[in-house]
Length: 474
Image (cartoon, rainbow, N blue to C red):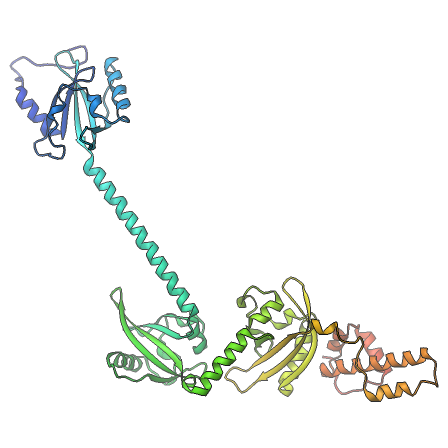
């Protein structure tokens, strides 16, 4: 037993191993074996015969091992040699990077072993790490390629979404085998009068009158296979709109799909198509605010001019809300507008104030038209900004000729104070009559419109002989 704990056998029980056999065993057990002196001089280099990645490195013998290491690996070697000089534990692997004057380098994981009769020589058994490094590099490159594919896919998905939102054509994707809707753009949902969430995943055939799924799919398939096939004429079940369907078959990710473009049949008429485009342009670019509501006053659509008056960021912020939310007198004004529009079909020049999202009030004049001859009846409100007109209007309320004549007859027979009082009564009576008429004799609504309490309105109605009119409180 030596001082370093290495045992040598020279008895007949275990024969000594020949040096050439020992070298072959070492070369087979590792990729690279280096024997160095305690000072770091290379005494011998043995390379695995089946490992040719290193080339010829027998010229390392006799050189300092530090000369064939990269600068970052030399401190690791120095630390291990220092432990060896202090007769301390040198077990454990160390990764060193070799570099030669030829400009190449490679990493090797070494284990250190004390050999020799006195244990004063170091045997470095190394395992080439280049295959692992190459595998790690391939993994990194594959990960980067996967990330690039994901980024490209997200880019194409964004382009697809923007295109479907911005296009004016209505189209629906359906599965060729199932006949169910895979995707649809907003224009198609509006044309079919159905929410996108309700449409996706359901059979497309059920959106049309008198169509069964199997027959409908067969008709679509025939239309896609024939180059001279005509569009399929259909009628939507919900909106009762006649359309022409143009199918196109394609395959994506191994799944056959059909792209169905939906064209309203009326849009193919020259006059109707041109007029429809003109009206749409007027709705979008018109100076006056245009608002479409249902018969209860819930907003269905609004143009940019209304969004500007209401200080709303986008159409989605007002859609689904009551128009009364944007009127200063709220439900009172809305009730007057809706009731008069539904009763007579229209109402003109109703003066009120519109309140924006941040409390800004604008004087407006509103006209309402009730469109009842539609699949879904609605009310169209035209709202005009009247704030500029207020500065040029004379103060006061217009007085009828008869009322003015009766006031003028008082001149000479009464003093100015009595004449002014008589004029005030005339104007007050006209305002009360107008409010009662607009609200269809709804006293509560009329009081709110005039800014009076209910009791004060009753006093004035009794004063002017208007209390016995037909109707009553609502």
